[in-house]
Length: 180
Picture 1 (cartoon, rainbow, N blue to C red):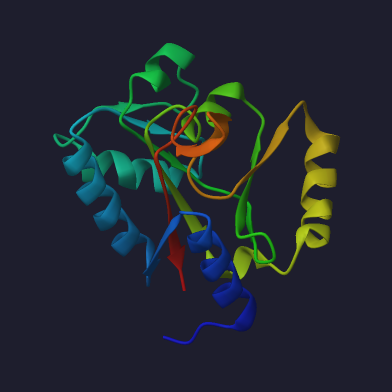
Picture 2: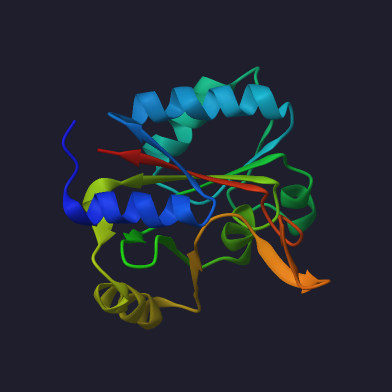
């Protein structure tokens, strides 16, 4: 499998920040990994808004494995989940970040409340830098109220005795399933 320079940089930078990247060849392969994570998490799964075909395939694949919450679930329901699955609009190579644009607070919470966050991203959506993401954000601002979130690995803080601690106010694990 051949990976171009900006995708390789995205993978390198995301991993440097504690994130995990697993390469997949198809959505079906990604579904298999989501199912594996769901079985390991043994809890409910929060799903962000996505194309109906993706949502239906997740529902079919995880029927009897996990209870699905969302899209547009309540904050309390999302907070009770072990795993959140989101669909970022882009990856940013220079920062090793994924960009999520959400028009609903529940979609934003899917990537911030559960202890494990899985993001499905196609490598064609990896951009060189933040400036290339500006048109996506500008377009979102014309539609409705929205939030744009850059995620660069697991939650971390250095507020506790000036030591970096992972997963205090968000996911302990952030995994990108990158379709190449």
